[in-house]
Image 1 (spheres, chains in turn cyan, red):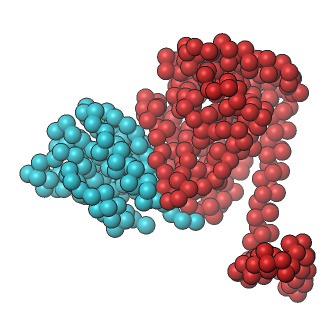
Image 2 (spheres, rainbow over the protein chains, first blue to last red):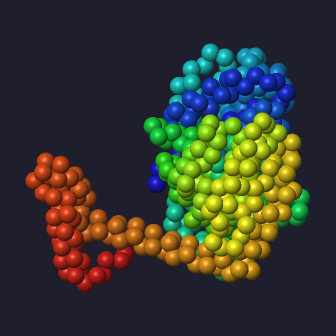
Image 3 (spheres, rainbow over the protein chains, first blue to last red):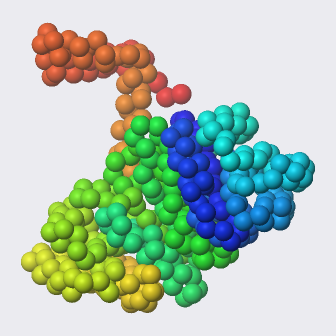
Length: 131
Length: 308
């Protein structure tokens, strides 16, 4: 049977701008992936529980509030605590270039900033998700 | 658990091996289906009912089925959005499933996923189907109790819940009951039930709920537990489960026979024959007869030792 890439798209933190997350969710769906969309204002704990129960291959985090430096690494930490660090984490949103190296060092595999083509995100997942 | 359900979706032999090993542990969970038209509030209601059952001390697994795209096979599974509070509870396991092209309201892996949750000791398994129209009645073949969710003001009222889906209900919910027309919808359901009395002796209740305000959920849970008691005491539960096992056995054997048939007869078997049928050179029935005869010859030559 064909193995589908499963991705959780989540919005941690308090901002309510979910257009970007929805665009990504839709683009991934159109690329044949199964996308679990969990909606606004999720805590890192909720996101990690959902990711584990759903057995996803990757988590896409979208944050436009400026709290990414706290929220994104926290998700990676919690995945480690649950022995689920094989789940790939990527992020997007208004994230200053200066923050990107720190986020990557914290275990976020890739950061997509505004203007990224959805094709790039799809190509990234297809290349990096364990099969 | 999570990995096991992935296996049910992607790698059936692994799950079969597991279920073989744990067959004595199956049959304890109460399996509940929740179905109804899109937008009736199934997800919200499922979340409320799950929270109510957890508060009463039950453990439960939730399977939320959403449709897959018929073109790309991809899917956005958004039911989880509506139950953020309970998914964190240690007694709760939530899993979204794509229908993966299946048309009956469930995915092919759903019934295996139900069995896995059962084997893992869940008291309840709640299955929310894709939004259904009139004929997506697969849920009956999986669930002990089926809740059909209706809402006021859906066009010609009961129009949206015609023959098939109306007949599979063990419990009716009129959700969004604070909206205009709720009484009318309830009245019409009751009227319809009166005209078509249940043969089992169970009186199908119509329960008004406002899932977003958690109203009527306690009563729904009470009625659901009562229905399970009824099924058990009347012996219907056992009969339903025997019928289900019989059907599953037949389905499994049917697919195995089909595989064996295609293995013995070789691949790409149908295309040329189908062209001949369309061109009017052969009749459908003659073609089928001929294939069947060839198959019988081959299988006797092999002495029926085709199992590998």
